[in-house]
Length: 240
Image 1: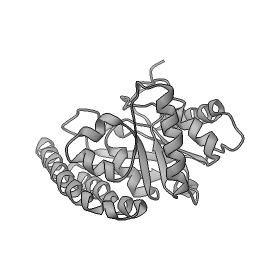
Image 2: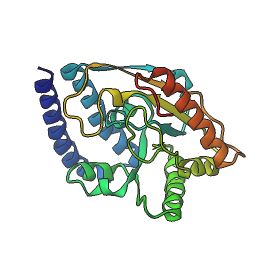
Image 3: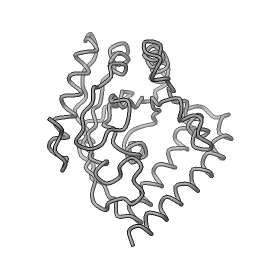
């Protein structure tokens, strides 16, 4: 029965992707904040349908830590879920993404309308410069920037090196970093078709100050908070 429910959810998500992406192209004449506010409905609808069909619920803690904004979100990245669920919680936002996503039919079209910071992860320093330049532009417009500092989806229990690019943007902007930890990967892993019913915990941490600080210090604070929080909420032990 869960497999059937998950099939219906994936079908619904595919249909809404095509519909919203097609409609999103027509929004190009509107200001960026307006476009983002409209397109975020895609994520909001899908996480609610996911809850209704597949029993994947969520519990969000720490919303009192969200500053008036704008700010930079450093989020754990385990699944597709958080890319949609963050739309539920935070003000208008755009993402740092790998440029390959922009080539996906329909999905990439809708994503492009939100003006994400699309980078080539193999470009090294040029990619970091792009994150900083375009990130500062979005923040000046009052748009939050979402960064997955690990750079890719990481299975529950596994740790990889956090990347410095987002912390450089934070140091240059002087705006706070809001750390986010969650265990969505325990319910919806990369490539997983049948999702596990249950309650995802998402915790929003206190803003991390960045003004006058080195990127390495900012990143260390964010990583320490995220990983220590993950150790508390994850059911899968972290690799030693």
